[in-house]
Length: 311
Image 1 (cartoon, rainbow, N blue to C red):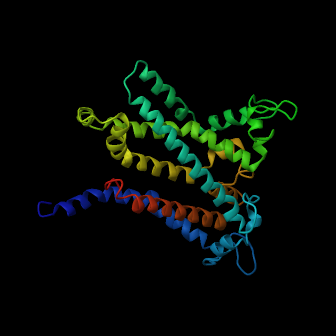
Image 2: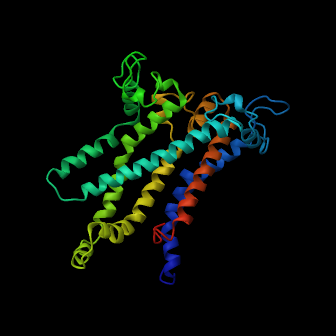
Image 3: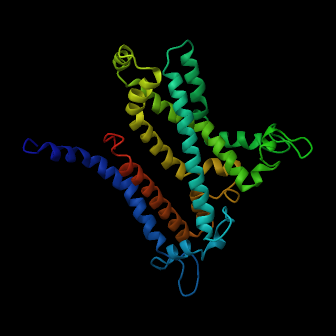
């Protein structure tokens, strides 16, 4: 041990974590990949479970197994997989993470100020995040039911949401359902973004603001030159966590509208697995993991300089 360099000693300490990662992450991923190379139905000469190579991937990306998936989300050409699951997932991820970051940043900025009742405001912000996904989904499901919910009217008595373009049966419509699911997700997980960004704000040395005030810097200049650059790594880390979670969205969709109305990547994994199409399910799961890996790589390599080596 004494003869080890600092780098070698650091790697030695990481061995238990690497072994744990191998067991709980790499092994299941490798097993999923091997399962994706097998047939899941008696099609042609291939038997159930027989090795078929990359045939499932070719069929998935060329639309040959569209009949196994829910109806397409985006109109026009392309495969059902790209139109439905990938389209829904990317739209949900981009829009929800954007609004959660903006609103969460605003909440963190307010909570970083010193005012009476700040503790109670923090509790109020955290409460939605503490609500289980199933309960959250049922709350929003009931809110937007035509005969039960108070937010949706009728053709004769439309509400404000109807005037904004939401139909009177929004949870049966793919676009309206996706819009409401995004709203529900933003309501719940904005608190997660706010807490992470707030932690970054409170780690800033307050003497920097005192020096800036002495130098005559305005509040905007203090924010531009001190606050934002120092919390940018925290914001990007928070966005990374939320992007990974959003790419795996399933629970809120299933409880509000159902996977047949708003199919996501995780929805396809579950629906095909429940249909005993194990090869197809594993293929979609592995493609999902690959897409998430690409998104994570963009965060790591695209914004590494801006984050000052936070990754």
